[in-house]
Image (cartoon, rainbow, N blue to C red; front, top):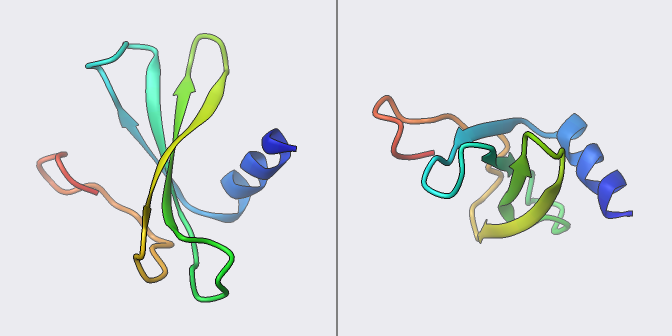
Length: 80
């Protein structure tokens, strides 16, 4: 069920992939922006994705942001 939900999020919402070299060269953070107006989502969700094994897991979320459905990285690469 979690896999289906995650794949649905991938197809429905923009995703931003940020390299996370501090943990491991094969681990990426997947940032998923959502629409929050319906009350079914909280904001930006962060999942960890291992490119070698294909495994992903829930990391954390940034709640309370109004409709962060479009994400972009700052020019210096430090902020979303």
